[in-house]
Image 1: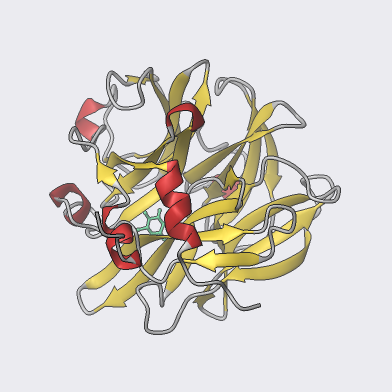
Image 2: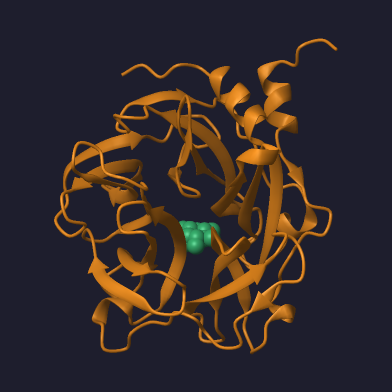
Length: 319
Ligand code: BMA
């Protein structure tokens, strides 16, 4: 077999699950408009998704669904799992787009999510052991900010957060540091939009950072605005293991873009928005969970080793 070109590798990296979409509003135990943009974790040998559920006011909350194989027989919590705190001003318009990471030191999950209000979107943090009780740690940085996730451990004593502020109308990914998960500083731009590319208008972190021997593998969404609206696609980058503010590689091309009908048609068409991944190192499998067209939930799979192989063939990033 001839070696595939890099673009060919990107094209075949992911396989959509044939049962997609895996969850739609019709599956919900209570009335809802849309279910999308799920965070993902492994808990008690099950796959747990924390899903953004949009109600009939257009406000969102988060609900858990569990499955033994990560594809079928989802058990959805019968009522909202994590709702806006009505006494909190910054959550007045709901909670959106969570990400989950296992904090090794705390032995708890950190859930970063977007709190929405007239003040604009901010990133908030909650800690949980079981996705039943949540301890709120409040908002982390000023609006407007989205697409945030912590790393599972500290770097030189400091926690690190990837997030996506909007600065002068520009939407680049940043990394910030904190000694205590409360006070944040040393803010640095991490991954910028690229003029003329598929990710020219906005970029934002997709799922939680994934540790590999070569560095932190990052999936991110990239947006191009067109005369017909925005297209949300997915790219890859690699960060240094010990200095995650250093970007080592970045894909020129996207590895997943809207093609299937459920990705092209929905409340917001042409959107693939991954916000959770589950990795099985034993079988070399990666499941990427994503919101499809802001309406339903889908999953695509790849071999972890193929993702790394592809990333290592991507251009090195000049500092
Ligand atoms: C982004 C976020 C996501 C949404 C996407 C596409 O700005 O708000 O929640 O999926 O737009 O509409």
